[in-house]
Length: 190
Image (cartoon, rainbow, N blue to C red):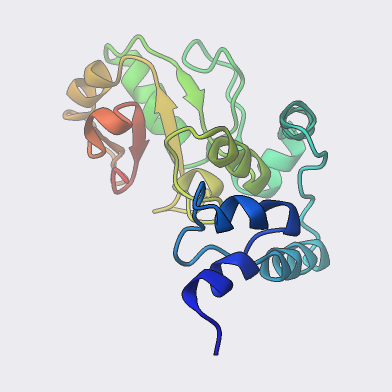
């Protein structure tokens, strides 16, 4: 039977073993082993998911930046890239969210979208960068079918006030994540 320290050492690469043994670092409980990570990568590749590449932060982020969603890709997943004043960055937006934001802009919201639909790779890049975000595969930004889908916006408090009067059946809710992510809006607010 392995001791706890031996089990922790088995979960990091050989170059890191000495650091763990010296007590200078610890492996988080539940952290995947190298073999588990390799298995997940193989499963993702078999499913046709294009994973980020490179062994440096800059090459990883560069591969993510080059994975921007085109208009045809957005349409294929149920999103659109509205060419409006509230979408100057031309972000893909879940089809059901676009009319809500169009209404809000016509009724006093002066902000714009900073993030809409994201691919798994884009979500993984946010996770890797340490930004506050749901784990890749679990974010409303990665889906478009109601009640999935999400946007991040500027002037979120103004949007919350304007949306109080929105008459449509599909509501867009913000402010639920508080100071951690005040700009986030979705059907549930999460």
